[in-house]
Length: 172
Image 1 (cartoon, one colour):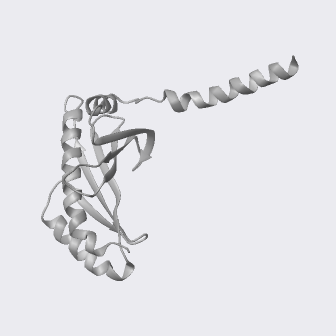
Image 2: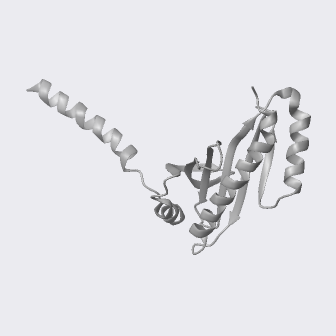
Image 3: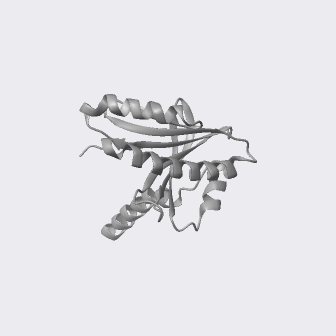
């Protein structure tokens, strides 16, 4: 009887530990609205990560993966919804990694791309020889979902094009 009770307690403890992993749902309204709106898109996959600290503030992170038919490139990035519902950050890191010997060429290419665009910017990180992309959106509670969906489309199109431009520098 003691063995049965012990087994039941161990099983109950294990189940109680795994429930939060399965029951996790979005906490912020903007995150909930976005996930609800993109549900069913065949080429767009989302994964709720949870609340993280980003630049000293609480953001709810959603990982997004998009593989369309227009490019061989798969877009993998994060959408970060601010706790105060005033902004959304789309962040892709890394877009590419490159050989250290090509640093000057990569910086020149990234500067030229950044000079010709607004809204989405590329960053060269010399600590790991990578290029990342970031887009910062100012939103309201009423506009967040629509602007985020537009931003996701822009991020995918922009990074596909930039990936092709920067692929010559990719680490082999």
